[in-house]
Length: 278
Image (cartoon, rainbow, N blue to C red; front, side, top):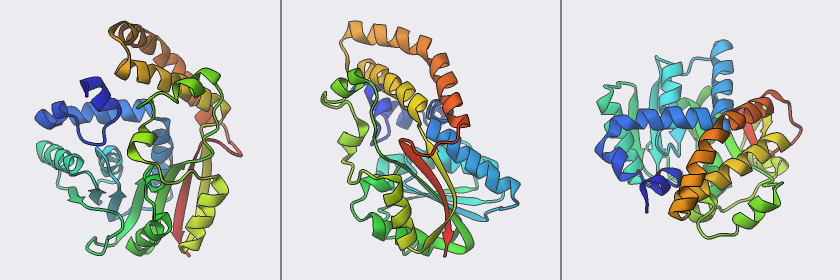
């Protein structure tokens, strides 16, 4: 797998990051800028902070490369943060990075979300773009609820609907290895109503609901994904053209996604829920 493809499709940490863990800071900043769902997570976190909610302990369930584990630690300096992930290489890299920046806030555990019995209860649990890959999503939601301390909150983000707009995107999406979801083995394709119902059946109440990736955002993302695919998997000529086009497109992408993020959508291709125990 190429270095570019390893970055774009990391189920395991790319070798370059394992050799130089401090580069993970750059990955986090790129993802914070270019992955709009991360904007929405940050907005919800900021809203919690402004409301006076100050978690003493945070669990990042399915932490990946730690984007949100390190973001939440910067926003809540007094909180201890535990990241959990099924990929040992991700956990090892996050642990290396936390040691490299001398973080006293972080700890990382290798494990599945099906068994959280050894995890200390937390005031805030993050589960960002993870639940759709877990066959027993209802059991996982109950496990996450069991982690909550009194008055605790869960921030849950999942893609929904999967409505596609560009015919070109639909054709390209049939190519092998186009879609990260297909490589990871997505177990669920939710509607907004389904994921809300599952959260409620797990004993969680809704405190905030926001729909993301409306029509403008969805089209912007489809163009972005096509460029990513050819950058990672195309011929040398396609990679060169994609790299040039990608650079030119990024400012347009940010404007379109910024416009989309400022809108209030009744539906979209993503949903973020702020939940608490009923």
